[in-house]
Image (cartoon, rainbow, N blue to C red; front, side, top):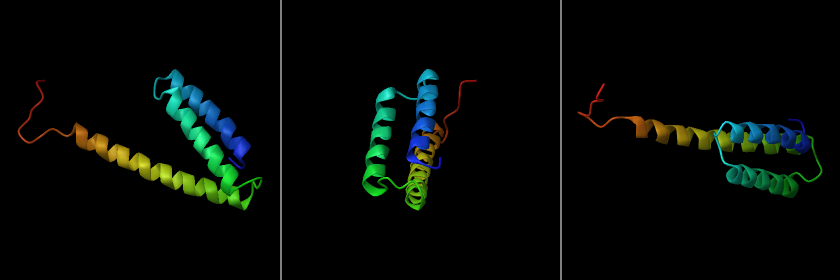
Length: 88
């Protein structure tokens, strides 16, 4: 998204879909939106140009790193211990 207002519109669509599909709860999604709004106001202000692009890049990298960490933990949790076999 090219501006915070566009980001917020996209986020609202994502949030609605995630809640409808049961992929996430409203509380954490609202908290994330509030945090992004607060950070954008503090560091980007009314600028939707270069500063918004930089802010969005940093946010994407942080989210990607967090998602990779969660994925790694989930994959480790799905690995069976040595000698353990599934019953089917």
